[in-house]
Length: 169
Image (tube, rainbow, N blue to C red; front, side):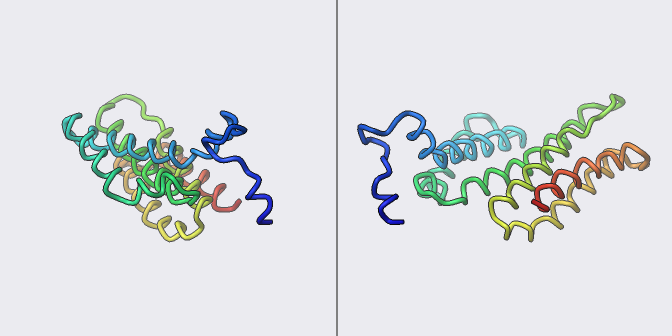
């Protein structure tokens, strides 16, 4: 098995093609996405864009995001998925506040649930966070549809179905 890894081309080698280099840089792209999500959450929290960019940049350089961006670990994927789940719940909450009287949809709930499910697929120990996620999403669904009814249950289904599909895989 060691011979296989010795023969693999590395970025910078002459025989390393563009696709190989991009595939080997997957964690770099995921880390960049993580920093972008941190920036977007900062802006959504009413932090000025330049301060949010500064905070995201400092976070990227001073935490384990930077070293993990160059290694073949699954932590960047897990971090992106967890932060994306949080991001989509915030988007759903903001959608709720912005759309008084307008029919709301549950797309953000579905994306948040899919992101949480993807974090479970990347690291099984993320299953510990599912009860808190489900509680948070349920409270948000109840605040979105305080009288319950079919729309509330559609929200719950949008949360439960994607995460169940990912956790069952």
